[in-house]
Length: 218
Image (cartoon, rainbow, N blue to C red):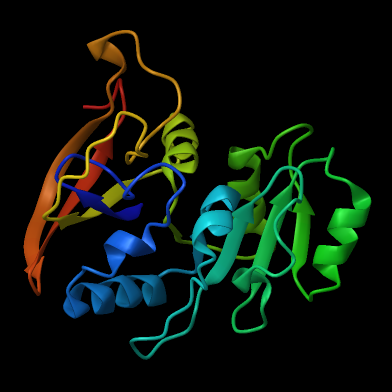
């Protein structure tokens, strides 16, 4: 998992705003780091709500390297047909549920994009990971998710490492999206612990890297 984050743990300026507003303040060296990281992975995953707000390309542009497979969980297949990830500049897989309307699935496929039904009412993320490994030969996945996708991936223990790009801002807001959303925990026994393994500067931005230690792990 890789994300830019403010000092107070926020991903965006306010609820509903694009993360690109804050990302434009990243040092160019940090942008290069982001694209170097993308180039090292087989696939990159972003939630459909992030695509709706940011309309990112999720490609490798600032460095030499191949763009990873773009994986977008979108249970109802209601992603905009004008979304940049439905372009032909990199391969894309849209993961939908069995309940997704067939006409929406057909229109996405007509864009030249693969669609996989994984899960009955919602996309089954563990099943999607198995599909990616078996059918697409994906050995490594980078998550650039918003708070909902980040929480679900952590909830299913599908995240091994977290890399944070620290932005020297405080934006506040009780409803401003933070790194992880989802349901709150009931006790400290449920906390997901992180073990710092590296910290360094990328231009003027501090970058920290952590191993994820789930409850029950030593």
